[in-house]
Image (cartoon, rainbow, N blue to C red; front, side, top):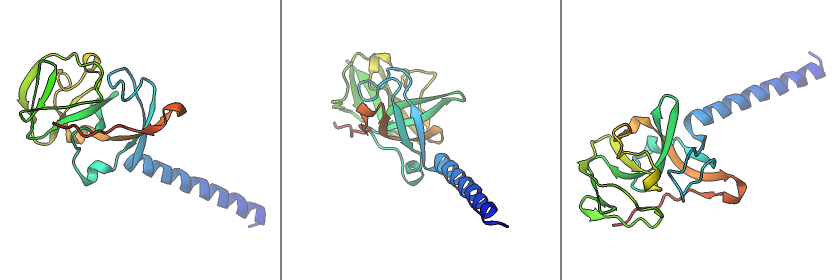
Length: 177
């Protein structure tokens, strides 16, 4: 093999290895998602690009307050905030979310109009999610969404990277009561 052929072979080999590594990272570690809609305002805006950690929930369960991406249907993913986990009881009364008997203090909410719900206990292996823009969110309150099985969760939203002026870590604020 000549030097030129050897160099071309090395370039091809390097490109193939890079593609394989990129595919493995996308499949198991991180993925990019686009926010579609207004249900997570003001935390996330329509058309923002996010990096989602797909690996974290292989090591642990989702926590209260974390923003997750989950499979809603074969064609559509949703982005919402975890309010309750398996065994928790959730109730919404007078526009206040009550978790296990205690009202939540959610400083990130700007639109608090929300209908009554529950009380309902989240089944083990599931989470209850709400959008931050409660009056404009299709979430666990809807029978078509309901409790989210953990195997439908794709990952945890960690970073907004586009548009560049919104570059920031995602507010996975712990909900206090």
